[in-house]
Length: 473
Image 1: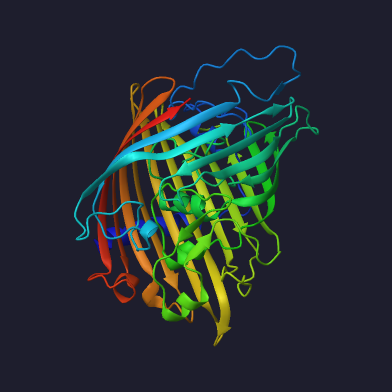
Image 2 (image 1 turned 180 degrees about the horizontal axis):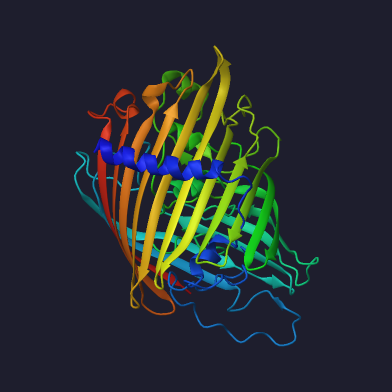
């Protein structure tokens, strides 16, 4: 067990080490386009994140037939079958395990078993969303999505709301685009762009992209420049943002998780037990979007797409948070920084490989003997392969994750190690319905399960079986 876990963390270290070997950021087309490009061919021009979702073969099911475009509108389409959509996610799940993080525990998924940790079944509607994607002209569009998520405060809330600018003209060989609003930066290789940021091939995202969905949503603006040099395509994106000062709270107090509940504009996530001092210092929940220190954060992303069936993307994020800033409600600023490396390859005509690694740190609180109250180093990596069989697609993923604690109030005993494997099938039923089946096994060790939650062991192995039906109307 330890050898397997160490092997996964070694994979993460190797992937992150590749970042240091890149003398300059590598550049490529958008991650979603990389996934969609057939083996042996160049990727098509990148669609802006915020344009209506396009079907990606072989990962995504066929999109609903488009309605006839309105006549003589000059590219303006505000309310039509093309711009308004609804999504519903129905589930049946069977899982074991101790209390989930959604119920204030240290469980690594949104599900949990019986009081004794045995298997328990659950089902029903897990998400319902409304998406509005108007076009205001040939170059200007928007993506606005709101939804209800089970285990997320039980109310309807805003997911994303941003304008997307994609002019048809160029500046010499350079094509420009931009976004402004509430949005997720382009980090995940597992999610579709636009819409409600849904996973494509699995029900449950990796630990990396689960956390991105929870704590890396920003309110800001970004600009992208794209160019080609011979048969090589490059792009460079830079963003400035606010309202992401609490990023890192969950990753430190709870650790990594594998789940698909996403941050909302006014929502929050509950926190598990903490030390007596940190229970007094920190509110028992972390808000998704809040501005505390009035200091802008920033990120930069470079992509490279060569004339071969693969692409590389490098992303760096720094929220510039003040770890000593705090609100009256005891929401703290966190200084969170990380590198992310993504590799997307067509290894056969109907087989794709995704590799993603992340390494970073987050700090909160005042220094004591030169060390902040909380100082968490975090690392994770996964490899995912998907093969399209025509009537269905089969996906396998394996990953490792860890945190290392160095804070004066959260010492090494709060660190964690873990690994997980996922096997999933996606079955397009028709243009409106897609079925999923998934089995997920997460094994992790975290000392706070014993010291703070009173469980008999720091180790837990959880298995989750899920069936899902997604309807897009």
